[in-house]
Image 1 (cartoon, rainbow, N blue to C red):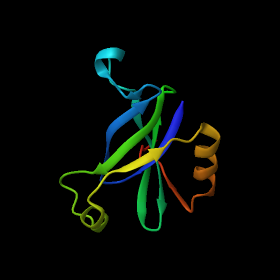
Image 2: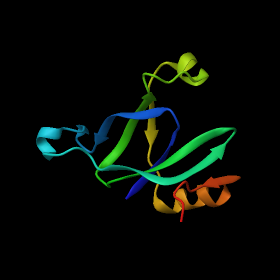
Image 3: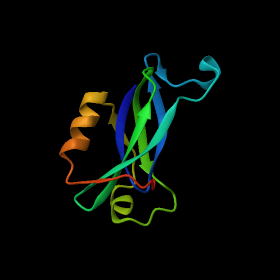
Length: 105
């Protein structure tokens, strides 16, 4: 599995695999992308941890259409996210100033 962090108010756009853009007809399914119940606060911004299958190389992220945040207004474009491995995700979670797990136990 691979991972990436995505800011609150942003969404996944296109997905790349080894052969180029993810082709639903070739794969016969959508790519496996799962939002985890963990996020960190970084410079006042909530970053959610996502898990993706190994076949995914890179994802495009963009502001949600109804996002009124300042970043969405000024950037207004997509950003390509490189994926990280489990060790890198754990390291980032361990060094975060604030870790949030919104699932109540």
